[in-house]
Amino acid sequence: MVKNFLYILNITLPVIILLAIGFLYASKKKINPKTLTDIVLFLLAPALIFHTLSTQNLDIQNIFAICFFSLAILLIPGFIATLIKRILKINSSVFVPTIMIMNSVSLPFPLAFLAFGEEGLSQVVLLSIPQIFVTFTIGIIIYGGRSNLKEPFRMPVLYASIIGILIAIFKFPVPIFVEKFAQMTGRGMFPLELFALGYRLRDIRISDVKISLLVSFLRFTIGFATAFLLTEFFTMNKILRACIFLVSCSPPAVLNYVFAERYTEEGRIAASIVFTGTIFSLITTPLLILYLSLT
Image (cartoon, rainbow, N blue to C red):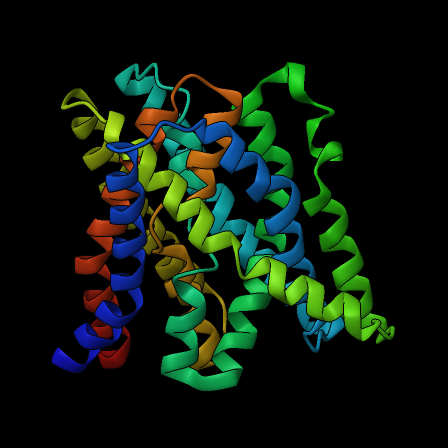
């Protein structure tokens, strides 16, 4: 248990430090958070996704099964969250997407690698592919409303994902300078989006804590229940089973804040939810790893 906690601490501590830097910077200088989120959406995210996908060894037969599981752990929580929102009469526009869109990259990637090596990392990457498409299409529409139906087609991430998958499947050669550019540029995504999130945390109000705690609790419990049902009803190997749990039980993605900042007036609330969910994962992730090691 102590070893597992140290693993999680090594992964999450850099995240907390970057959030703190952004938070402290906000007390010294004023910048427009939307400028930072635009850089993430239009430059850094496409580069990261292209490089991640284009360097994978994708098996077409395996992709269909992975796509099913990936979409299930994304859409089932979204459906349940919609029902809860109606029952509790919650007005916040970020409630449903912050429960539906989980952190399927920056936390599950290193966790799967630490626990299962390259095979675990490969499975998590495959699980993240459909979620990338949904996040940058349906996710944007949810945040932006019907007036933004064309917005996903303006996003470079969508085309970077398609090109990356085609390169991985058909083994198209990629010029070295393109690969190096994508790798170098993509590495800047996580630091900048976390800095922007930390900067926005300066505006959080006490009234945001209640909904943040509720979303964090639902994100984990619904995610766990979804993964449990899928792994009970379908036959799969141990590594894929564990990776489904790792992704499905992840905290809300930082992209929730990025989208909320760009398309809504609830960037502050989304920042609070993402921050609370990340802190909440310091408790839930070691417990999840312990559960996986015992079952």
